[in-house]
Structures are given as structure tokens and as C-alpha cells.
Image (tube, rainbow, N blue to C red; front, top):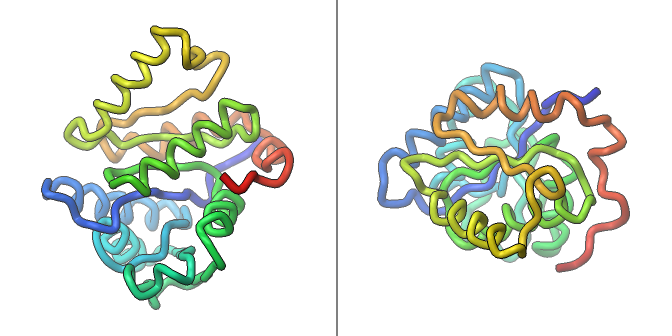
Length: 201
């Protein structure tokens, strides 16, 4: 059976208007470090990404940053990360993040965060992987997405969780690790890998 040794965390390269977003990122970084779970993230040193990575490092944890070359001037890759991988493009970045992580967590973020989250959900729905996917619903941030998914499901456009992706939701940051660990408990190592090379979506 599988455990959670590394988590890929998607979140904003901006801090957002709600102070709770930064606080959540910092507290989650501390939780990851204290539980020996490596952070795999987008590699930036600003916004929520920077707060998260800084917190992991400050509390003695391990960080892998993965960033495409064209973003290195915009998001300032974090040099303190024990491992920094610069990829040729976004496709290689996302594939590398997938390969390095045992599950996926989405904190608040913008379009990039949403795109990465939905891509993992789509791959899971298509049977490409069984890694857990969880959103942290800080102050109801993801409520509109949850409402949209429910709307699409009611209209028969999205399958029920039993036949598609079981998107986990945590209202509090201390619920995240227990939830993803429980979800990963029944996933064999072989089921983590993408069935065939990921498409260049």
C-alpha cells in the first residue's frame, strides 16, 4: 500500500486579499515539515507559494521547486529549496510535479492554480491515476467551484464520485494530511503512475 511522502501543492503566486490565505499557507508549511512530508510546488518565492515554501524550510522540512524557464524572472525561483528543477515548458513542469508527488492539494490561487487542479481531476476521472486530490476551502474560497461541479453533475455532465474523481475537501488546514493519508491508504504504488505518457494538453 501507499503512503504520503511528498505532496504537490498548487497555490497562488500572489498573496490574495484575505490574510487567512497567507496564514493557511504558513501553517500548512509547518504541518508538512513536522510530519516529514516533502513539499513539491511551483518554485516561486512570492505570494502564497513563497509563504508556503518559506514555512516548510523554516521548520526544517524539505522542498522541491519546479518552475519553467520562462517564469524564472517573474516568480523568482526560491534558491533555498533543497531541489530546484527548471523545466523547458509548462507541460514538462506539470509532468514532473505529478511524478514527484503522492497526492495533490490546492490552496487558494488564480487561474494557474485552477488549471492545474482541474487537469489532475480530469486525469483521475479518465482513470489515469488514483492519487488523492484535495482542496483547502479557506473561508469558502473554493465554494463557487464546488457549486459548479454540483451543477454539472446534476445535469449529467460530470459522473458521481464513485465513477469519477473523488475530490476531497478540507475546511481546516489540520484536516488535510489525515484526509490524504486515508485516501492514499488503498492505492498501490503501481496505481500512482500515469498509465501512459501524459498528453501535452
